[in-house]
Image (tube, rainbow, N blue to C red; front, top):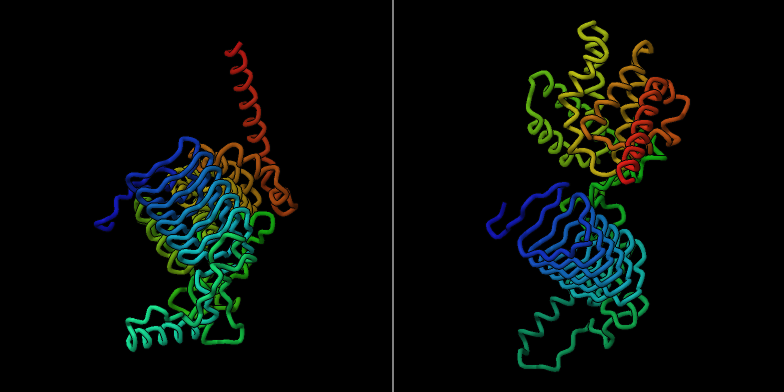
Length: 417
């Protein structure tokens, strides 16, 4: 997209520049971007993250839902989760960055150090933005008055290179401390450096935070941040935003089906809505599933099509939408729970059959994998009294699936013999 970039796309949603050195046993999960001249060591796993240029990622490293900026070094055995590591920073072997960590420019985290949640570390011990502004102002003034004085000392310099309690004995850096009562300071840091734990850095599987505690149709508590706006709080605004998204997304999918738009156009519109309204992929899956199930219900209720034909017509064509909404195992489980819940609300005379045929379509289209079908089927949420009303027909199909797998394994054993 830019003249100096050479990114190429690889499935599943991996973008790589040229001159990247990936060790054979390293693993790039879905939604990964890696810049030019970066090295990734043996046994390293990266998912939902952006890695800059000229980075060195060591062996047996785990990086999840994080941003690693240009020239950063991540040592062997490190774990980095939901964090930002700025350009030129170094995280030495076996260190751990917990959720919400921000490692500033040039900071060095010593080996075996565990950085707690929501910790922000800077190279220079500046307490507030006001101190930073005063320091810069005084430095410029001193420079103008006496450019030849090599003995000038910055008022905020420390004889130590770092706080050992924060970055380790041989680390470089200090804890960035905010004055809680300083409203102006908080305003200045309403972007990525302020309350990082609440920032939705990545569209990680929402199922990881929602499956098991999901209340479909209920509203989650969340906070929205922008680098250009103040912190936004209040469940009412968030609920309205999700409701607005649901209405707009429903209309988008319905319009696509009515006018027989191509899949890519519908996906582009949905993704634009998702980003503009700052919702997760769970909301996208919920809205898409609702539109498709309602379409099936309309065909059946009006005697336009029979149950199987209605499901085949709608999901046979439009289940491809889910391939850009489902990325991980728990996303597939989340999708099955959504569809199950929606089918429970259909007419009692055909809801179980609709759910069975939808399940088969999603499996045949490779939207959901067999192992994740079992994970959903055996999960507590799919077996509640409310959800069980559509399990009867699906149970026969699950049994057939398990039997087919068993037969396949026996055939394989015979071939080996």
